[in-house]
Image 1 (tube, rainbow, N blue to C red):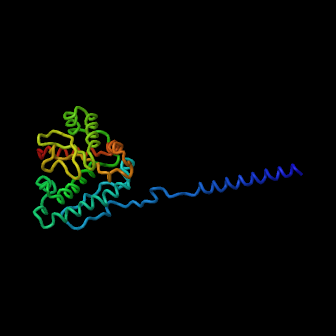
Image 2 (cartoon, helix red, strand yellow):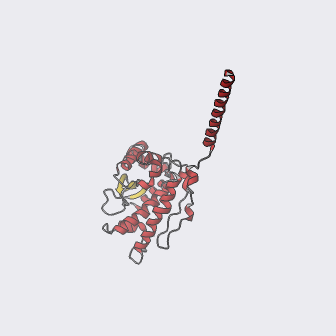
Image 3 (spheres, rainbow, N blue to C red):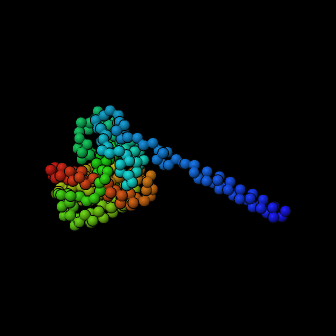
Amino acid sequence: MKRNKILLLCSFVAMLSSCNNKKLTEVVEVPLPTAEEKMTIGHPEDVKAEEGTFKMLALPYQYDELAPSIDAGTMEIHYSKHYLTYTNNLNKVVAATEFEKLPIEEILSKLDMSNADLRNNAGGFYNHNIFWESMAPKAGGIPKDTLAIAINRAFGSFENFKVAFQEAASKQFGSGWAWLVTDKAGKLQITSTPNQDNPLMPGMPVKGFPILALDVWEHAYYLNYQYKRKNYIDAFFNVINWKKVGERYEDAMRRKY
């Protein structure tokens, strides 16, 4: 009788354990939505600015094509919200003014730096144009041809350039940009600017024609990298469109900037 009770108790414990395991398994197997499923990513071609003089640069890739270096969510917010706003605001600021029919680079070079609305929005529009074109899917690597020679001449080697550019981007306090520019003597220089300033504007410590731009505002990287700006800067080198940067360098040399 005692043995039967023991056997019955053991059977009950085994059954209870089996039920608990079954319940646990059922809970674990319930699929949870992934981050991608929670966020619906749109298409850059669907973003339209209001009517005005300046048009948004058509993004030459989809939002997710720079991942994992720059994630799709960041790209969508950056392009469809921040960049769109700068474009719309710039068109409002220049409407019915002397700037309405001027090229953006001429506006920047002639800028009255006390005109905060024009300074911020013209800079935000132009800077992002250079930034979008500075990147491409399956890019990275090293520059070639004339640009490679110019970088080696100016910095000693590509690795020296990379270290100097990363340092300029890392040390830019707060929001701003890191740049590779060609100055009036045709020499490549690295610089950084705060907020939406750029090297075309009056009074910049390094003046020149921008050929490469890195946005170090927090909205450019915080979703994916949080406070780790250095990791974002390192990842940027995986998507640099050296072909386009080289074309801008050739253009700068023709301009004799």
